[in-house]
Length: 589
Image (cartoon, rainbow, N blue to C red; front, side, top):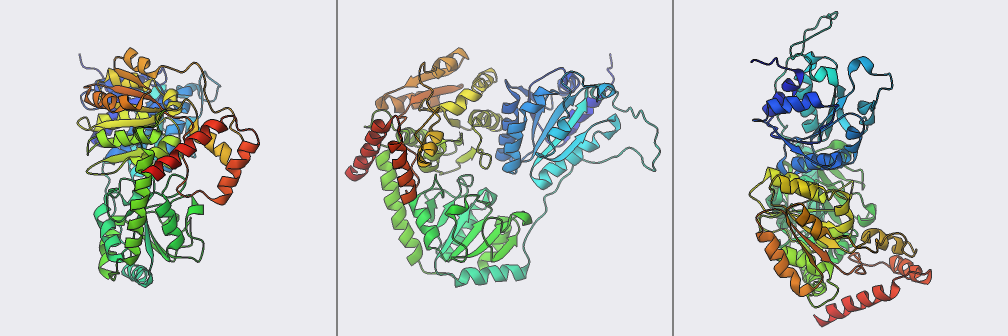
């Protein structure tokens, strides 16, 4: 029997024409028509059932970040759509193209305070670059085309919300009389990225600034992804060390002779020294927000390359802004640069060797409780050279930043600008869907994992071999240290007893799960988990008193830290012991 085509079929079919093969979401009575559209197109678009809509939005964001393709998430009306918000803000702030599709009450009852009636289009006004209510079947598939094109062009979130009755209406129905000189819109699923290269005069001005500098530094962000070879070529010509933002960690390998590491609280001492020393700064695809770690105004000449004109010069006075794609711009700029000597570069290569020795000393297997640095070191050593690491926010990001090394085809993803907790596991699920043949590891804290831990069950249901490694300090570690650096004793940040058994949860979901407390047991546990053919979780009890110290501790930070002790810091003896052991380990090695 032939079944009449409904509007939701047009919606899903058009997604498929755009190359969408996956939709992450959770059903509800506000999207039953769209679910039917997915069922009828199941051979083209797979629906990934999650446990929480926030996870669906994180998954769509991660899918977009990892593939460069539009990520799509689906939620029902009212509370379902509301739950998407955090993940969508992650996409907005990290400039990932995402399409969110939500349901809405039937059009005839809108405005009557019907059950779960929430104006999701209004709710998403701030997060979305395109935001429309579908009120007529004839608007589709054109609104899908416009939404996706806008998400790609403006690197952000597009939102379509569809009332229940529109979802199941006949696909060709146009119920209203036309009074304007128009006909139903007709478009095609096509988008071409513009090739953006600055003007020759601007390139020449930038080259003049860079050629005049004697101590050039490069700050590379995620906007330079895919242009790593050109970034290193520029560094070679300029004799310039490369600092990488955390989001831009995978732009250039960590074993590159030009790399000094990260910048900021999670960064390295050589990078901070470089910023203080530089007379010229070349910023590549970054809108680095922590201006305290950038050169003082007037200290350095600045050339900034960014694809978005509005972002150039928002963090630091910029002498020559270059609006363009980083790769295309460097290709045109490098021939204009004059080769410099190696003295400045070699100075920082020596500093980096000393820094790495200090970091290696902290990753000692002899320390009990397990040092989080040792956990991160083992993870780095045992993972494949094409592994993808996803990460949560908190102290976990510090250990990943300093001990997870980009080499080969490795990649690294986290919630960069929003710095949300909990995306590590959903990110891993989405990226494993996108790249089923790659090793995908979620390196997460216990605080973030607990928020969306149900998605481990999602991984087992779909047979996704994601590996989850929990840096378990049984606390909100980053907040603990932030309180102390303000001069306050810690308060309300340690979870205490009973300690959850996350390994048992993993096994209960049908996956591999093990809890580790002794450093000698850790390498074998990780090896076994990585070899397991399905989802695996290694819950590692680490030293809760290990501080994620910045690359350089300032006098003001040390003074505030001491003040927290004077004001009654409850775990000062344990923290002092850990700090003492850290210093002894560094001196010994």
